[in-house]
Image (cartoon, rainbow, N blue to C red):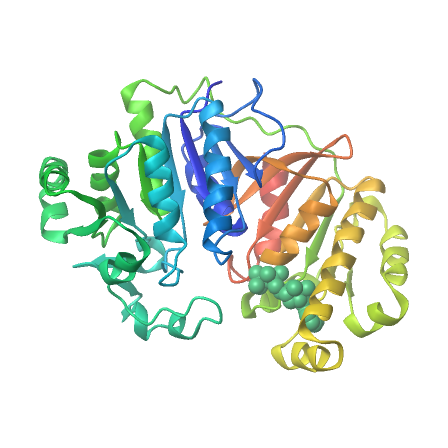
Amino acid sequence: MATLLGAIADDFTGATDLAGLLARSGVAVSLRIGVPDVPPSGDTAPFEVIALKSRTAPVVEAVGETLKALEWLKAAGAERFFWKYCSTFDSTPEGNIGPVAEAIMARLGAEQTIYCPAFPENGRSIYMGNLFVGQQPLAESPMKDHPLTPMRDSNLMRLLAPQVTGQVGLADYLTVAKGVDALRARLATLACEGVGHVVVDAVADSDLRVIAQACRDMALMTGGSAVATALPELLIEDGVLSRSAEAFHAPDVGPGAIVLSGSASAMTNAQVAAFKVSKPSYRLDPLALAEAGVGAAEAWLLALPLDASPMIYATASPDEVRAVQEKLGRGRAGELVEAALGSLAVAARDAGRRRFVSAGGETSGAITQALGVSRLDVGPEIAPGVPWCFAKSGGHDVAITLKSGNFGTESFFATALETLDRL
Ligand code: ADP
């Protein structure tokens, strides 16, 4: 059916997160990795999410890719759009949050949009225009030391102002707390004053519902994934969308699972340790990969029966990762592991496995690329922000879940496979 809502995300796991939250409504969501090469055909979903890799790209590139994505979504039928960025407002004085929003507004002829990165479930809240991470102001949180987008101010108006040419304003918590009509009135007043870029406070999910309701007719909303979560229900209430007619049905994927882990985060280390206890596992050593390639791991995998649900992992402690990086260089170590996990995914598929659990943001990019997956239909969540997805790979239906580093609890891998069995 025609697309109702078109979303563009500035990174891969952010897109998965948004797609998973939209899919909570039971309505079909499709996730595209990059702007599709071909124009939309009849197979688009009511909610389409395009994942870009534009968070830290040069501004001109980020704007160019986003406008290409916008055109594709418009051609799919979308009339409302969502620009999704990180809930910690990851950006620099140059961009890319503001310039991209302004470019989309110009293309759509929209005079006003909102900025709401709040995600209460994950501890991100906005009060008087200041963003908090848990109990810390953004600029005192670990984000102050981010290698690419260090956030040294917590005030979203001050962060946004240098990124846009138009005026920046605030709809504060006192207004949001009064409800939908009060917020609409405040936005209208700001519009009369020529304020096109409005930061909106939110500290709880109920605030996000008020905001979604007040802004539902805007051509463009921008924010973290959470403020978009209420949109499907509003469209269903309006009668624009029927839950049953557009409900997602998981295809009947064959058996044979594999866990591929290239994340070195603390949570993934715990998840690997927990899964290893009950399932066959193989540890990839980047130094051995550099010398002898992926052959030994592949031979190990191919000797296992299809119902073994093995795990292949490069996941290691920070000290081990550092030691490898010192010998191989950070970039080369990462490339070796990503290429190995990608080719093992293909080997697993060609041996008949159809269920893939991938851990790591960059790793997931490498695995989907190797499997030739560019479109994912989003199914039920395993953990907040991590849904099962379904795709075609090599002519087969496959199930794949893409988990970024710190998501999920310790038992995530086993839970993921059990969740899929129950579908
Ligand atoms: P996360 O989502 O946790 O950041 P990513 O997959 O995005 O995970 O990033 C992890 C990076 O670390 C990848 O490039 C991966 O190839 C690399 N890596 C994983 N294991 C090792 C290791 N043992 N030694 C060196 N690099 C590693």
